[in-house]
Length: 93
Image 1: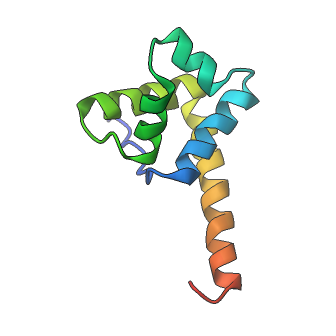
Image 2: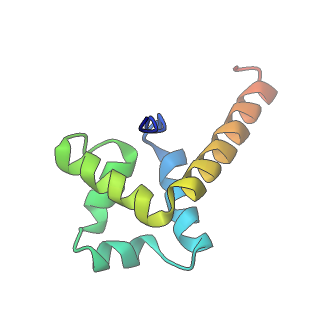
């Protein structure tokens, strides 16, 4: 049975997790863009959910896979939980 895709929320947390995953594995977001002939602004827009169409979804999936889906997921969850804790401290959540 195929694994369900992780329900990432596009935005700053996802973007940061992808960049962190590339750095953790010795790569870079900019290097990936150059190697895959993707404009960095398009890749960024895909991670932030600005580019929502098929091409944006394709770029986002490729980014996550290339950065390491397990590393991206771990980084995303860490950043997301940190954000929720900050909201709780401020009495917002």
